[in-house]
Image (cartoon, rainbow, N blue to C red; front, side, top):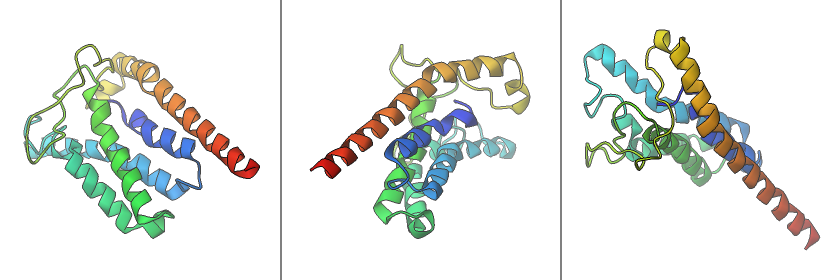
Length: 183
């Protein structure tokens, strides 16, 4: 799994690229939280639930159904987030689903149960594309040389594409705004 620092890259890139009018600050903050939320499943280890179980790490909380539920929960509070129902749902769904997608591109652990509860099968990115170093789950192991390797991998494989997406969206937004004022 990527670190808590990099799971927020997708909603940050989308939110900053689309601009505050499309993604208000509260919705952006909720999107960053939603992108990190699936990894709270690590608490299941303390209850004796194995990693490979449906309720284990990268199981139900990494599924598309979970992303839909988080999107719906956030959309129910769309007024507090400063956005319409559909926009809040879509942004929070994408932010939450991005977590599993990034995990699928890591080179360690089990795959991601995207289709839970319909299937417990774990999925990975195609061979050759699993380039993100998997982060250690324990804080102690993260605060070691291994943690620096993981952060370096994320700075290479997650943040540059996220920045590029943000810049492209921002450029398209500004071009469209100029066209509207000119036309």
